[in-house]
Length: 328
Image (tube, rainbow, N blue to C red; front, side, top):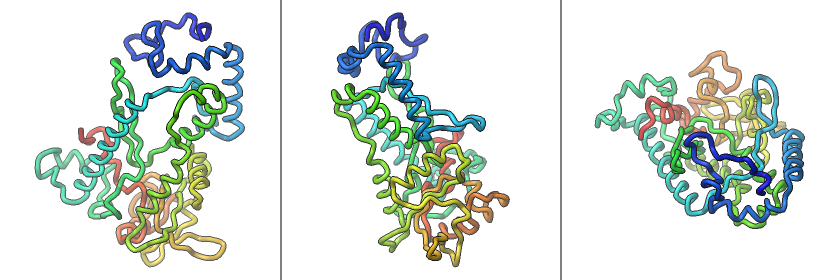
């Protein structure tokens, strides 16, 4: 391990160094010392090469300018102690509840405008505020079924929120595949730590989506709506649909009949109750948004307004993560 970091001078400038405090390893990384100490630099380099090759073979890629590249992954994991993680977890939960309350208010009562907390024009002029969502009350009052809260460390090592994403968050597939890949590349390190699992995420997501079904539906049909194979996050859409055991559909697989969303199947039409959509608001429904969109389903917004289908996440959520209107 000493040879691995020979000549290392720490983070550039005043940035917080995750692993070292001066010349000393920080406490969360002390337990990694023994396992890494047994690895030579050439052996570690070989594991890095195998890791990247495995990612390409499995199709764990992302698109940059039409070129598929393996997802970049540092073989040395970031270690966050349980006490620190528990604080982050409580803080993120509190933040999402605040975002939920903000969205519920701006699309309904508007008390934040009446009380002078935020000017109405700040919200009304946001490109992510959609009047089509006004007055729509989703089941259980949940608009943010999935959130992406981006965290950074400041120069003192404190975690801070860089930005929120409550529209169409993506990236969890890389969390799951990264964990699996690193556990295979560094089994010695994983054996020495008690690590919170992430493999159960798809089933937790499915449970949340089923709980969001319209009132009176006891056995809801859930689907994942994708823009298609040419979308940069298609790998994730397919992975989540497969691991949740639900259908992966495109807009052309759906149609609206009498205010209900139906899915075309080999045995006929089947009603859909919850749509985990990975399509941006503007492309969801050509009747209400972009008339040239081929990615959504005409009538989808009307079906949601009628309470016959739940969209996860809800339409119009972007006003809560717009930099000009995010509440603090």
